[in-house]
Image (cartoon, rainbow, N blue to C red; front, top):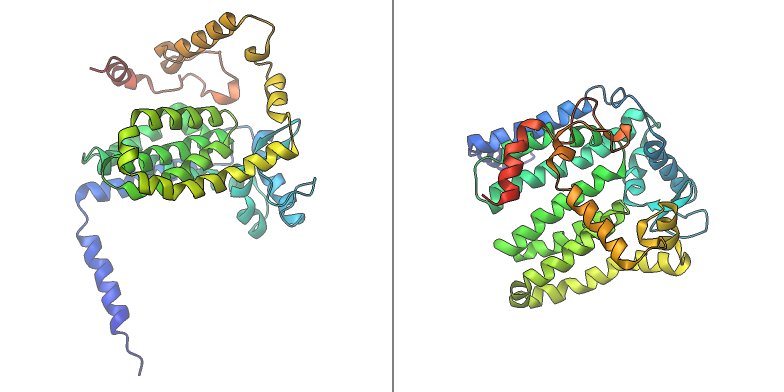
Length: 325
């Protein structure tokens, strides 16, 4: 006769653990479910477009499966995929591989994979509140993020922009845990940083600069954890291999990418003029009008009609954070 006592003990332990959850934990779980619900409902119908930059993720995943995980040039597990006229896709393509292998291609499925991945963003924000700041309002962070128009729009698409933001949020959570109370989270921080780097071409500069600044600011802490830091160096080196291979096989592609974008860094103007243009763009990024009021500076497909990028009711909290009050 089969002995079910270990299984019954396991079930009892699971039920007991659920009963021990605090009200804030239940609210946190409920807020994550609400986040998923408001993104999965009518996913194929909104946004009203299905842009080529969304469809290409699934199509490239299908090509990768067809060619036994080789690129058209014969590279096994390529770091980047060619998108129309440039190499700028990576993690987002691999994310679509399993669903493409198991199911028929569809708008809803392509976007749903991105939605499920984006769940890491509110989860990371909530865990920062609960495990780093030690506040009982993790659920509120999830709902606030869910309300932001720019995030609501992009997290319902398959654009790689939301994927990079998702992994960046995960990186911040893991790094803050490493910095405060759990040094072993450095392993997750390194993985999340690499996923951010390979998700979206502009994110390379963002995560790279973030890493350099955090290395300098927290150098004393890194030195105290030097054994752990050195232990993670081989992992970091391994994660750099795809980039190094890409640079060797496709020299000059990064420069070509900047030329396609008509970057002011390549224009025939003085270094002072380039720096002034950079400072102008940086200051504009701090302008509350850009973030909280409707405008036409950005492409229509990246805007919710009648809304700024961030819900206007959040403006007072933005100003408080900006002034450090």
